[in-house]
Amino acid sequence: MAGKPLLDVRALYKSFGKLEVLKGVDLAVAEKELVFVIGPSGSGKSTLLRCCNRLEEPSDGAIYVDGEEITAKLADLNAIRRGIGMVFQSFNLYPHMTAEGNVMLALRKVLKQPKAEARERALAALERVGLSDKADSYPNQLSGGQQQRVAIARALALEPKMVLFDEPTSALDPELVGSVLEVMRSLREAGMTMLVVSHEMRFARDAADRVVFMDGGNIVEQGPPEAIFGNPQHPRTRDFVSQIAR
Image (tube, rainbow, N blue to C red; front, side):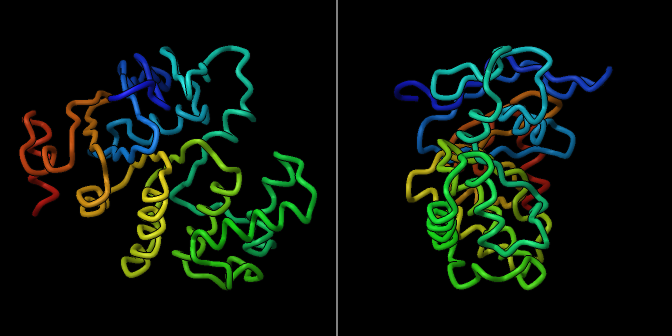
């Protein structure tokens, strides 16, 4: 990797009681890189993502974003989360607010922006995800795919350095998945740094710069998509890839 990584995870451990979920993970993500994390359920993928913006507290290790240690004791959590957008499996939209209102909320609460400025940025973010015509719609008037795109717009409105995606399409009907992946593809083309946990293997093959395979709380193997899917070196990766290819 050329230059300093934007995200640098070093010897990361996470336990829940006696259950050790992450066992010394090292991962670096370069600016503008799209890194896909794959692996069986329970391998630690989502926990890794949640540690990267301190939704989960690591048990040990350090995480740096743009050279700053976000796991330091006095790290400003609000500033950290402004710089790292997060898109979840569930959309987490407020049902009583319009799409525009949902996107504006963080701008008003977190950035303390005046209403007019927040509205302008919210509309620009909705336009980026192809939903400027749905600004006045409430979540129950939107499809699951549209709701997830509003959630992506909400993350983008804060102008983060990178966005983490945790299974962004797994709650969607199959025919709605494409619209969300299209937005992610356009973000990649615009140079957004992204760390994605997903089962969308075809998208990983087409769009990822690098694929990371996790199993049992460790990174077992990583490399370009063609290497991981076409010629995996580790027996565990080979087994997983052969299962998903069926």
